[in-house]
Image (cartoon, rainbow, N blue to C red; front, side, top):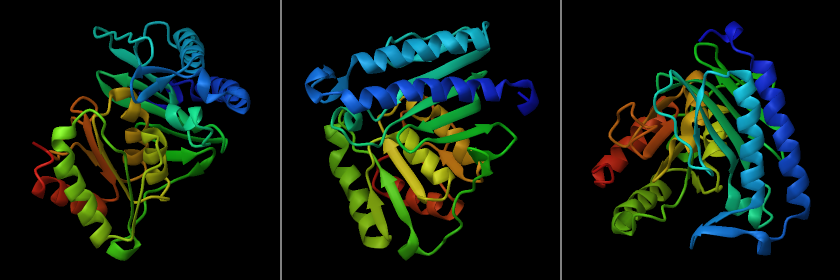
Length: 266
């Protein structure tokens, strides 16, 4: 989908509008208002309302497109174009009053991202990309980092909650990252993690047990910013295989080697 053929300005306006709603609710939200989908997975009326607003607006933008939605569980599988929406990525941060959360909206064309927007709500930063058109923060081009110095690599990850049987192998990788590289972060939002890798603020991101709405927009950002994105097997099936590794070329190769040596790809 060519950049000029897509109503990007309208999509950015939609995302910023819903972001303003999230920002207002964040100021008054109490963690006692949260519900839990599972013992460790919070949700609230804010997530649901934001998703409804995004869905309605995106449906007006491209009426023929289907949806993959986190909160309602709606999945359309027979459409050429699919909106993939996470209305509040980093809900746990939101619930606990931590200002690291965002909106992730991607458009898939035959199951591959062609448009991606990640909006860091409290920072008022819109990261976006259209396939073949580069990646941007607001109006400025962004690029992945170019460092190949292990001491300067800053990695970011997320902790899995659904795979305790793989925890030992996962912590083996974390131990190696801490031993070999300059630092490790856990921010609590995969969408922001990927946007920050695309912007060169972080060098490499890896996580498992994710869903398409967590990574569809951010993965396109990293690719359009010159980075490499695969799953833990090194394949391009990261949207559907529940694992993702994204970073500059050198850092990606180093982490892929560690992940596979630990057997985490199996």
